[in-house]
Length: 351
Image (cartoon, rainbow, N blue to C red; front, side):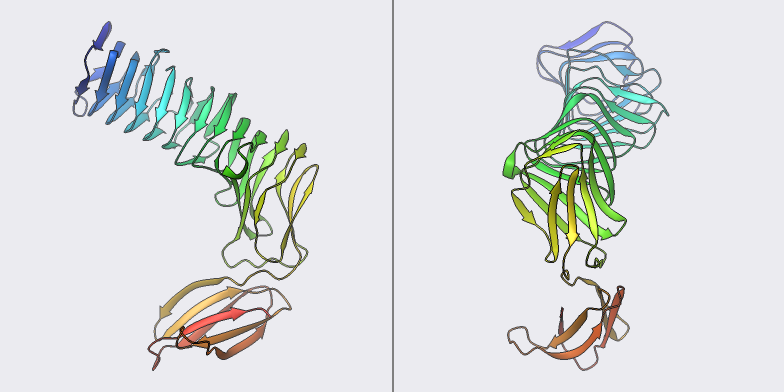
């Protein structure tokens, strides 16, 4: 199809295999009805997906392909793959499937209002969103190859995670903001969690220089829940400080704090900090059977005492001494023979 219009006045489904259908120009879509793609459409020239268009299959932009009908509404439940530097000028791009850029070293501009409940990824070049973006469900993994400019970002549900930059203001009505992968910095212009208890910020601590951070160039308005977790057996030393939010100015604080024991949350005009004020909970790591032994590890804090206990029956309180130690700031490994023990349970306490 090189030019003209092919419009469905009744609900119509196209189901072309492979390279059979080449859309090189013109308009294709519904007219007061819905056109559905169940196969493959190869968009190889400047053409438009018109009116209400549902993709349950695959749409591939390649060559000179560019989706340029600014009155169209695309509902993508399948795969929309950009293999060039083309983009979209649809009115609405409603993504419930996969939008991906796999080819072209330049920038593909998504000049559409986006409602995202699916997945978005760029393995080549850059995907650039320049209008209002609504994250409604699913997980949006932000990388430096996915950019947002000139619009507003609404987090209504699902999760936003990753590292890179959202050069827009983020207004969180709900959902989860989880900067890092799981460590690293996500940069935004402003952050307003105006949805109150429906908004959550997840922070992961894995080392003094390995933690997640939200960097805001402008202002922050805080509500909702702060979740902080320790990972990889990391046990922070008393006095360690983490700046989890940096900003120019801040209003309010979190309504709910889910923070490990021994860690305090403090606020200042330039951000939010976690400060280790005491010993943090022991984390058991990688329990496994190795040869004839049961092996597990846990992180320790330098100078603090730990006691390992054992029990053969969890229906009783018959915990008995197994060993104790003084921590040195590294992982301690427990190795116990499984010979002649049908079952055995362990717990670690500090002190």
